[in-house]
Length: 507
Image 1: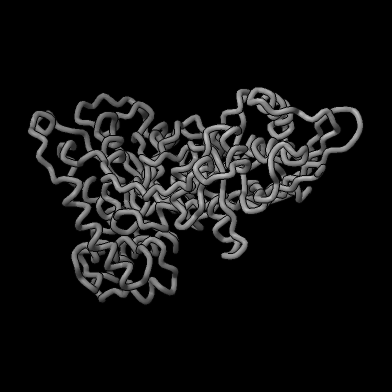
Image 2: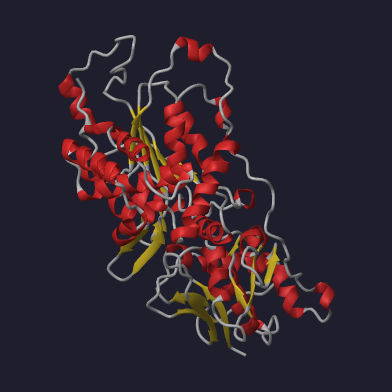
């Protein structure tokens, strides 16, 4: 037989389209040619495959070898095609049986010694195999290092291997004992641990704001002097969020798998991404010739923490406006598009002025009002308008610092958050932050006093329609935490206070 056809998968955003790896042996000068829109990593497979085959004891055919990766218009990247190419050469040259190859899909990068190295996107590929249909669904042979994430897909037939030789033995074996074992790993069930709020001294106002943000899925901006505890508070925020559902955990794991950063220990742990302020726009939203997810997608179902917010380039911050509204990122290229989920909670922190000490009791700040305004104006109005809650975090007094840390624990706050979250799901099937305009009218009805309070605040602070709706959503969350079906005047007054942040100019 001079032709062998094997199955594999490419990556295109969150999708893993099927790829046929066709290997043909013909007479002519010895050589290996790979066609089908391969990138540099795929073209280099010919050298890895040749060395791997020779080092595990197989013969590299002295014939003209053509490898076609179909469909030809789909870009192919990474070393995931090394394993199917090597097996195709062996099957086409008659060195291994080819009768069972069509029952499997393959992915794996080869080392020169024939070891199988992990690949990106194993979870996305396994999802795609599972969606291919019951009768045509194939088993999946891949590196053992990817077995844990691939096995997260229920009922997937996963056969991990350490080496190319093990895979070849699987097809050449005459008894079941020499074949690869199906991987049957249960989803990890270890308890999820987060830093505890009992470590935070004082800052009751900020803790309350974080509780509301977690209960309603709201974004939050913390503004205060250095050392006030903004980063400490933000790092403990994921522990307040409700436990991840199976769907959320799989979505988050799939995105991390595309970046090669998923590990079984992080299963059901809310992502917490904190990019440096020198990050580019592509680093935040994703991109590249073969688009990969950025920080906003890697924070999917978790938290994106932007510390020193005004220090980010203004153009970089502007890319956050669309995903904050839609929860998705679409990266367009001339030949194709890639779409990634980006439903994250934004927690941002900043100083009130360039030196950071404006309003501090020590009076160490010597910044003029103009410089403080210029510093705050690095954050555009449209982006600020999309941040639901904006609060000031005050400096810690010596008495508060010397007091014993005996605040409320993360577990007790998270219990209230979970009750409010469950109430929202029962009422409207989604968190309050994602309510549409029509749903706001249905679920955020106000009594006359609450409505007067909101109208007065809107007139005084000149809020946009977006800000008006976001205050309503925050008030709805405060009412849910209080366990009341109606939004009352105290709930509205508290919600208005959380919108004042940068609306007030420094004095």
